[in-house]
Length: 540
Image 1 (cartoon, one colour):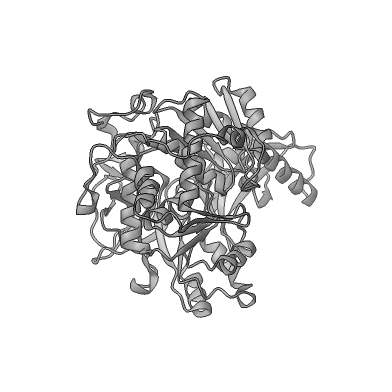
Image 2 (image 1 turned 90 degrees about the vertical axis):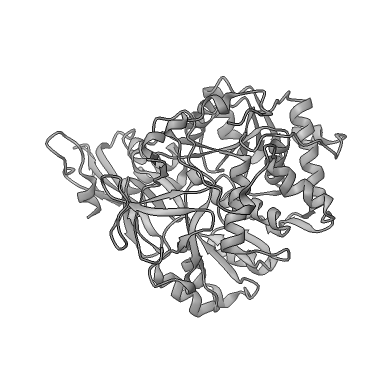
């Protein structure tokens, strides 16, 4: 850390990984030379007001359109509430719980303006999922949409450190009478944004580990601005009249970037959908005249079925990330729309996309090249770079890097100064990256990272299950699905009713999207002589 910090609460800096465990960072572009003091919200929002963009629409939704001025004022009022009513000091963590809506966007910016650290959580998480997040980040305050209060209230009973939950009504744009809106009324619409250091942590994004224990990935203000510069300037290249839309929740850094950071950085606008299955996403593209869309390959494939029923001529820059974009989906979308999907490979640990390109510009099968600001190589089992064409683990360095919150797994993610996300790839002589798969047990399904062991743990709490193993299985519609191999107790019947029973049990135990879409009953699981389940045999 630099000598200067605005954080009075030093929890984040105290729990950064030791310097010896961190990746090398490079700042090889003039635009990546940042000052010592930097608050990303000031650049993303305050400077837009100073530049005269106040009357331009920043956020669109079914409820209302908010101009940059309205968003600025709402964020400032919430920042006053955080400091004056809840005694927030710079460096405190604030849990945010809501679908993608106007109040979530304003709350995220307010936390950042006040010098806090945003810990945004997915709406689908249950109390059991929230507990380790709250405890690990030592969260004392939460801002939560009233529609998600039940799970958070239950989590509070499990987390004595969570002292206060302040509710807002994200289903209304005005005249809500919940606590946050009541406290905001009468607060000044101006706020002196805290002058944080560029290296002060601004967000902690939690991602599931292969053990099911969530990892807190910490990012600072400089990281936020770096990905805005690298992804926008080199890959997406948005302009002020663009309208962004997408399906990823802002709790995913992919969604945070595409739905909030990048539109504000550009001076464009974002159309926020609280839920965006393919049918609603394609309707939203038509409704809001969206020109940039972010979602998973499976969603693009699903939207093709309805594409003749909507006018999506406004969409010129579809962006795919979250999982590998199959060549077939790219070609089908290109044929149907005339537009090329922009493919991206990224990681929560690096905050956003670091490899990408418009697929029309790269050889068939390639994902793209390292974005300007990043460098990539491929490592073999000895952690040595391999020549072009040889397969191994992709390694990345750039202006953003992995910084796990007090986690030994940092030592596995960073190898000899390189971030190693766990992607198996090869590179050609021109630097194009060809994605082959995942090196660990993480299942990526429809853009969601799902821990197989976590699903196994949920299944094993049902009395019908003797043993189980969970892997990713190829699927025509979703690319990959969660599949469980289950050994039943002797008294149980292996039939469709039992499948439904176990699926329902998992949905009620952990976040519903993690449930196994396929269950196969087996007499025994393949194991080594030491008793370790051989999941690779199940995948095969």
